[in-house]
Image 1: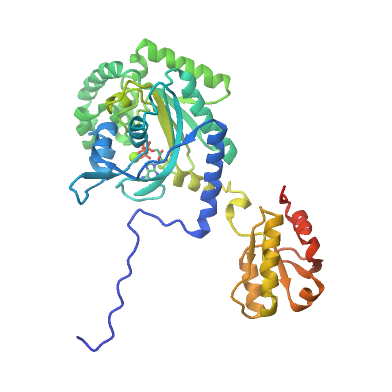
Image 2 (image 1 turned 180 degrees about the vertical axis):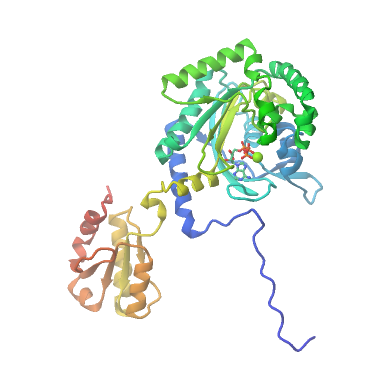
Length: 438
Ligand code: ATP
Ligand code: MG
């Protein structure tokens, strides 16, 4: 062994594209998650939680073998039994699997929602990660356009509540029935064949696998050719056309603005009829914050009885980024606490602990941090300041004797004052406008 000091071990880092959520950010996520949860309850949606890992075949069979996700983005591995497993790249397939497995689709309708991490091996960049998080909504057993409108209204209310309504646009399209789509597919392929010289490599490959996806290309060199492409909207079957007209009428009646985008096709194979995306121009090229549509064929495709279905998923990271960019987070979403309570001597610590508990009993919404760990007067005050609290309560021997505390205003230029311990809860309630115990 060498005499020299051991080389420090190389630090292990997180996997590229997979982020830690730091304490300084988590309050924002909690704010958003609380909004979502409350909203789902108000619309009568129940939460479903499924495992993060599923059999690979579930995704291959649902999302489609020739989609970007299945072809190149999945985290797939053999477990110790040699079974091929995949970290879920999205939530719909798992949701259908679970609903079928537990008989939730049998003679009943369902309105479900979920939230959690998804995994896709993409090139990490702003708004695009390898572990990201989605909130999703899935409904089963409704074939009319009313439920399409209902889930769109739910999403619209979420934007409203987050202050985002003016910053997002609803894009809408109909993919028609699978029969209409395959007839259109032939027309489209014929058109693309005529313009083969303009197609990029990716599109040439898709010509045989998934030609509709070519419409979604962002390649400017193909823009003009794509503008002239035959439109699915002109090839819809009568029922799908009627469904789409009714949906638009319902959205009009509800005052929801939308743009019909005939080139909106979505990257997953299971959609039929309605598809929609909420987009923003504030996030550069990662502009889709929420996407979904109808997937009437998927349950049957996975071995169940034909069951109409509509859902959407929204990317939480992109939404948080958008709220940050537009500075739409309210103060309460920035974390911190209301009150920092400081025992000034070892002899007042026990009283401070009790007082803190009494305040938490009286004001359940109060965010109170108790100073722990001693230190000099200066360091205690520094910590009080760092806590972000607008108020500090100081408990020295003097105060203890008099059954009082000193109330210090950390953010206002205001004289500190003595408050009796008995009146403290009432004083804080007034200052902070928090509600007392019922
Ligand atoms: P994109 O066109 O941006 O790749 P997508 O069509 O692959 O999106 P969906 O599978 O429909 O997206 O997922 C719904 C939402 O989830 C997207 O609109 C986006 O907000 C979010 N999302 C998808 N992939 C990622 C990712 N790799 N990182 C962060 N968010 C993502
Ligand atoms: Mg994608």
